[in-house]
Length: 494
Image (cartoon, rainbow, N blue to C red; front, top):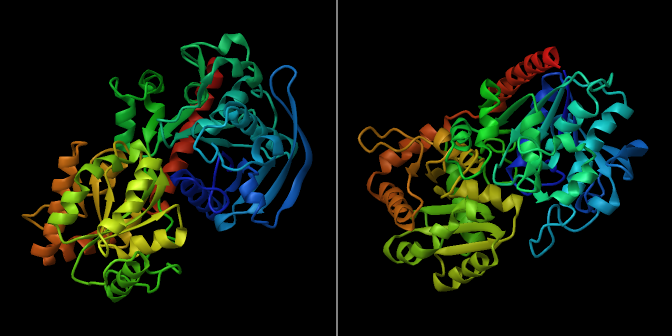
């Protein structure tokens, strides 16, 4: 099959979260299986600064948006993960700036709806102008969701892309591309589509909702999260539109690229290891402790955290009880992350309050993230909601037992410890309260000290889990065929 991925980010070129990992690794999987994949993302200024070797695919491409809006750009190709071809849309006015979605103060760029409507439209135009006939148009989140709408409304009879089936993957339903309705004219759709079941949302435009309407099939990134966002009482507000998709809406877990995230293959950690030989994990732990200014001790559990400091991730649940944890438990923390400035400040202060017990790194470092996964004993993800989550999947493979709130993909991928049998792969809690978090951390730390054989058994069971793309990539291929069937059914009615 010929498959177009339209997305706002992809590893190793641009990343703010798990979306970039999934687009990269799924694209690599499909390429390995013999499918022709083109991943289209913006040519951000941050990508240009890295001076990747690219070749020009289209020196000058015209992209017609709404009446009176003609955009010109170029298309460059670079080879991505697994040999997948990545097309970079060069439009300096929209993309050559600091930041992907917002400025240094985390303020959204006010022209984001135009930037990403243009990306969606340009991705299709690039396929037309290079004569790359499409079987599947796979769009990711609100930033590229309008490609499904453009294809059905503008290009339904185009010989290159008109017959393709469209797939929308919702990686995070909290972000829906809701902006003032004044941007709708630029999108280039007629007034008949500015309705509450398509674009219109209390006078605003909702780009994700439009994508849900026009895509042939829709999925989110875990079965449990699919149920959560389709629930009538869901806070995300798109349940009615997902319900209309009926059998064409589902949840598919994200796969993991074990070539990158496996202690047996990881070139970024000081010592490789496996479930059969954990000596290397001990070396990783001592190196982690040194890097984060922690007292080097093998006999204390280290809790690792790698995450964005936003409400979704639930770290605000930790702050009211962190003093109790540090004073009542023999435990260490190694934190990497950034976001909310208040939380950043608190986390930067904790190492001075608890020297040798709490270490923090504000920002993001891929090398340190690998070290935290490999060297920690436990990994904390107290998410308020979590569509899938990847770090808990990485943690399992490294024998770093997750402490998670039982929502979304966390509920689907972590098996709760059973003290009676010793079975499980981590520690889960339900209530989004500081007290519930405190008690679950206490439970995990107590298990480390009082049930070492159980803890070792949990670690071994966790490392045996398989969340590879060999499993979930096949599910996407099945879903693609379902999309083709849904498109054929749509064509028969229109």
